[in-house]
Image (cartoon, rainbow over all chains, first blue to last red):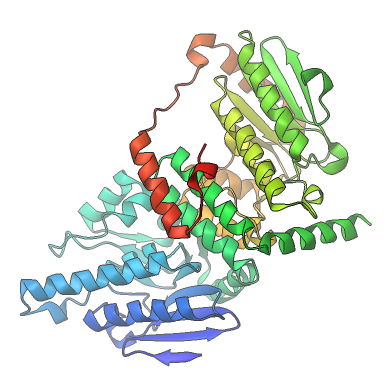
Length: 256
Length: 238
């Protein structure tokens, strides 16, 4: 499957969907059209029965250079507000996607790019990637919620108040990314990562994703109630029995 | 039950209880009986005012090789549900223990083994130990609440979605274990920790229990129930 939106390209191949931010000539700066396209792209991969894992990537050397500042010149407050809400809706759609979504940071991830990556489940980065939240430098406001939940309140404030650039090693240390891979080996690492997810049980992954997302916004006891409900939901489908039988047989064969 | 334990041993050494998962021929796989015995053991610990500390270990080649999947083959949904809830009860009993609990992990520690360890206050690993949460690979759900609270949401998702193995170095980096010790220095290192902790007065080792806002709790639980379209909330929330 391949679908080209104006600013985003979606492909699905061998259970892996790729949402490619596709304005390489603008370093994938997020403009109004890309907000709309990204939102539709997420809906498309959500509905695609073949797609089991979603990669979010950038065309050209950048993941995403941030919000498109040029398109805001001369615009009204109402327009800017509408554009911001469209971006929020796209981030939310990505975050709520029932499939595992992984950001591949192969180059600079700036501002809105950080929000797109932050709405994914986690980020795998090249050692050439860098990260920057320039909101206060531009007189804007953003990234205050997802970033603080990922790297902690104090570090989020450091990054937001200074607008400084951090390299991949620092991003790993503060847990903004899960892994840093030598640039030349990034594609192999991504392939290995998706291979270890795409054949796992989709309902297990979907339920665990929701339990984590809802549970980390709740107290622990509430979170455990979510997990108990997810287990009931899973038991109701019968899928679990297939998994148990496969696993028990494998163990028996190994022992035999 | 303490007198007739099939799956655990409890040894008292001064003010320290050594709790050992003891089904070595089954890699200490967590089964129905072990859930019951863990609950009983934690109750015994609570009732003994002289106990200052509990150390969890596994007999044989691993701390715990995961849930006993053989016991689930052919089981009814009701049985499965009871078994899962019983494990939650055992995990709760460990987490709510008012005395400090330490786990000492070795070998290939899978699923429920990691789940038991994460309920203790902190984890020490023997060099060479490896860890795995296999839920997504076997069509199950688990570890979605405590794990992200310990290692962060993004890393928890990676481990749970991939069901991959991770080693001691990674476990240490992500905060899953507090310390990694070589095999020949393990017991000495653990003894040092135990001595340092049990030197504190017993009263100050007791933990506070968190108060929960019941109203907020119920509202959030109902919203998630609607989201999943799960029936009969009264059966699910105790």
